[in-house]
Image (cartoon, rainbow, N blue to C red; front, side, top):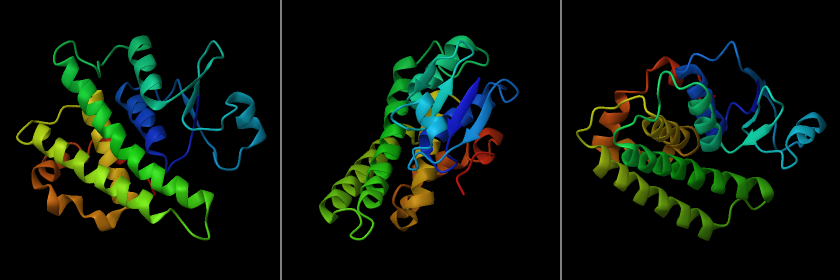
Length: 198
């Protein structure tokens, strides 16, 4: 299989983390691309030029990180990243983790579309408020919980670390100390440490 990815994309990172958690590095080749460049070889695989894109052994191009993660979970169920118990909590965390990434990517994308002016202030303010609400929900949900390497927790860590990468000025750790403590329990996991954006 072939994974088209960008090392700075939180969506691609989540899939890369899943690949490592499941020990599939020797089965899936990672191919870095610049989705903003619409490279011909990549557009031939994925017409919308978005990462991640996983080309399966059957030749189908799958997009959207959570869909790819669920595909890999189905094809390679061990170790399980979506446990049979507390599934609703796992999906809830997946959604909130993905929302962190979505809010941040929206601001970055808006700035790329108009590099001279950058992202509109109203959009930035709205997304930052969304980030604060999402972080507060995660603080409430994860306070006192032991982190587990399920898909929900992994999505949350990827989202949090995308904020560190792109929006260090948010200083989320000082505002959400229980979430920061929870994050410490997973951040050094090899699958996460080995895929950190740079």
